[in-house]
Length: 303
Image (cartoon, rainbow, N blue to C red; front, side):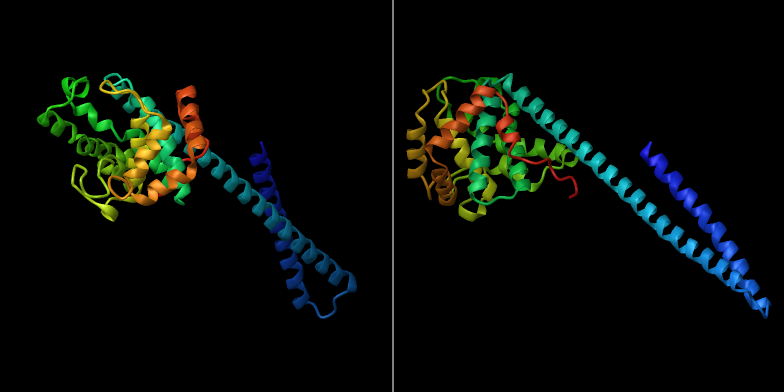
């Protein structure tokens, strides 16, 4: 209704302006055709041009209001679409991780907790909101390549044989291939795919799949490796019970500069035991990523 009224107002001002301009032009032209012009005639011409000027100002004002309203409505509509797309992205990520969760029942809970830890570390290290968002997407998908690992290996309760371990070590590359297939539609950045591909690389070069070391490993992957290890240590596994958060932090600290990036470990230590336990309890209690979502913004689609 407001848009219709604004358009009608612009139309009315346009008609009035046109009439006044034609009338003013006609009267002004007659001035050049007459030698003696009365004061009333001059006054009439002046009033018409004054009215024309006022109408033009009102016309411009109404046009500006109309344009401003349209721009605001389009921005609100775009934000609404972005919010819907962001929810769709999260739903897609959940669907992918749930698919793996049917095989390995710790996957979704593990991914949610690791993402929460990684976001906290990333914030400490000064990552932007958009970088944190991409860090989250990479975290949810980091183990998606395990879909390609046979059940006999993935669900084995005993220690893996060397050839079985080699199969497990291929899951980052398989996951990277899956992410690349969907990245065109979901607009994942390189941060996301780097986490999937490099989250098992070690700072000293003894990780897999490529044996990268130090700054050869992208920072988001180095951050995520610390968060991933923290949750792995504090979670029960078929072959060992979970250790305490204190023990896990001490172990990670001892491996700074070896398995883990020292700067990422430093950020983890700065977060502190109390806050890390709070993150762990929140995600476990809610069984979802509400605490994470509240700290992030919708993904930027304008790449």
